[in-house]
Length: 195
Image 1 (tube, one colour):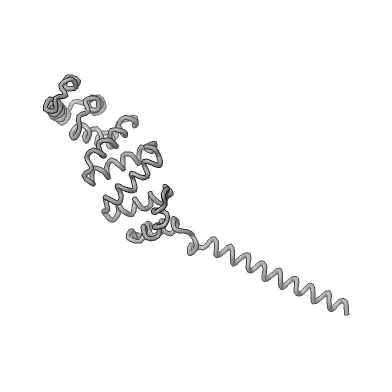
Image 2: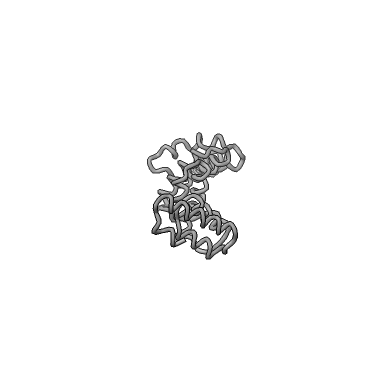
């Protein structure tokens, strides 16, 4: 009789262990499944699938936060740019640049481009100027930033940098003459001889 009771207890323990193991496996599967990934992962998947118009809806709670996560802002920025929503992109990049304190020069340059597209001339000038003054070397992005600064602003130092990095082409001379004219017209004659 005691062997029957012992066999019954062993069988119940084995069934309980099996059920427990199945519950653990089911829990792990649910936790690791894409359906329960979370808003940032869901938004990243939507971005990858080209469903740009759904990204901000999925990230609504994160974006409404007083301190939105940088990752959510980057995903939303990419979706906004893919849809041509330059104003939304401008807001996202502005928040990102505040979070990073302009430490990410790729983001600073991207922010300058977005500001330029949005028609925010002063913001574009400020961001390109930050980029040019912090970035080392000469590449296409540096050339573009310097050309924008010299063509749109009054930056003799950046004109000198443009000439020293990219040479004295006809374009450089024309930009220099235009810069001197702007400086003289705006009565900033002390800076004009620097050009």
